[in-house]
Image (cartoon, rainbow, N blue to C red):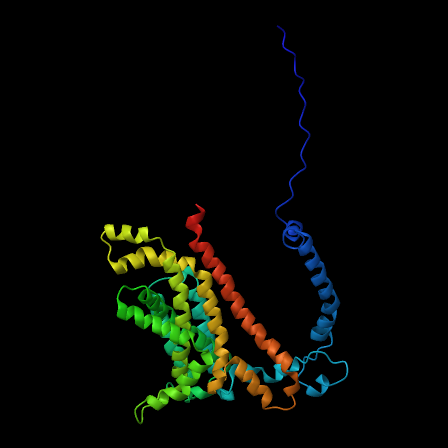
Length: 369
């Protein structure tokens, strides 16, 4: 029996797939992925095209760059960046003596250099802790003086960017180990330790930072013995540290709870002690899971230092207000001054967020294999 022959029918070619890289692909994915996204892109883009030219003209082309407040008040004048030219030293360095301002500049450069070095893998050695001690001793010697022929400058005259970096850096460094211990203590099987950690976290998280600073600066000295006084900078630093540690402890505890119980039981069968299990198995995984939350706390600490103005420590924001409120000629140009310090805050916070992304990629490499 003859079987009928079947003719070959080719399949029609399919269209080429869309590119997944390049600016056009990025715009198609992020700006025009659907009707609502496309509408929002068109509306926001239209508003930017409407207001952006006038904003650029105000900020650049008609701006006054020289420290001349009469020119800033002239008709048609744009942004008065001359206020930064005239007041930048007071904004950045606060009430520190004018002739000694090289000292906080050098101290700030040392602190920033230490922070950058601490974020680089090539410096992750045991001697980094000793480097921190040396740099901090040098920074406080430069800022306070009293040695090597340097005049004494009391801490209530420190201010501006050096004070912001000093408070945020030290509070972050000291808050992290406290938060780590509190997070472990809250999961402890010992009722006394667990209760103490719970009370500490709930008490600190139940009040705003301003009240903590107020208590540390004004109420705490009332409980000290007669004749005993602690510097206001140390009290404020302790308040910020304890406040930040309470919030960070809850972030770390979330990472600890995400570790499967089977890993802890497996470590126990291998004969590892509690601290060996935490150090070698639990904490490396838990901290890697909560890197974004920890960095979010770091950024929050950096910005919350602006609240120390309530206790008469004029950091970057407070120094800006002090610089303009004391001079009626430049007082009307606060917007430009606020934009200037906002740019400084954004630069530091953006750098921390980018570093957080790099850390996330490093700790997640094992999951990509």
